[in-house]
Image (cartoon, rainbow, N blue to C red):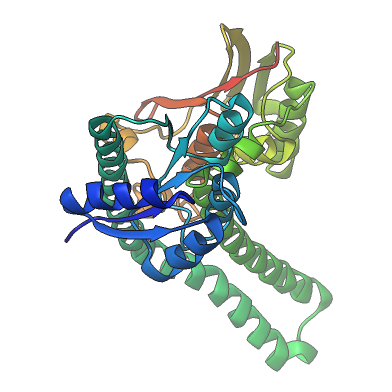
Length: 365
């Protein structure tokens, strides 16, 4: 199938020349005289790539790019910009909006065709990767989600039915115990749903350059104290505060509070889940070059090398043996948050001995 390209330029001769060039190069070509018309055609034809001038009436190339990035049906389409002059402000703004590349008129035809083909190849590889990832997610989700929903749901329905039918026969302590189990089941279901939606939103941000850049402009001042507070709160909930060994250098991190909080909550939750009470949970944070290197270590079940390579959304290992709760989204959420803020992430582990989660985030110097 021929790749589809949408060419946008208000100058008739340039637009027609570009149409002929790409038709001769075996493309299906659509053309528009301004951004407004292009946006209409993009929604109808869903082109594989858009080549647009910047300076145009009605809606210019930057406005078109902005509209594409805000449209869920169009945001995956690469946009290449053409400009007749080296406008640094326009270039900076277009890159911030997620433009793939900017070419200056007059352009070399071979260079133009090469740039378009490079972006199309990149798009094909990304779509292939996403398709593969979706298939893996569907497979893993079909295995883990039914169990994870059914278990707490059984508790909620079972105890509530029993209470409804036997309320007058039960004493206050028995009623309180059953209500407590219903509450736990409800919270577990809520966590499953919240993490599912949270992960979907992170994936959207990662695939939307303008959203990713917007999020990366935040800073948490005194992040070391914030990290320690979140850690202590999680450990207190599970009566593990005495297990903590923490040393964090002072730092201001280039991340938002909401994402830093979620990142720490998920890592500490896993450290608690996969290690026994009265075994250490070690928290370290030091500055190394441009990154703040955060390490969280537990001395629990650990991972094999093969398992580390397989870690992804909805994947769990040895569920029956370890009886852990959740649908395996914690580490996937952590990885996405780290990627949004251009950090680094890796796991060190030895089965039945320890696991260290390494997070490298940029700090404000």
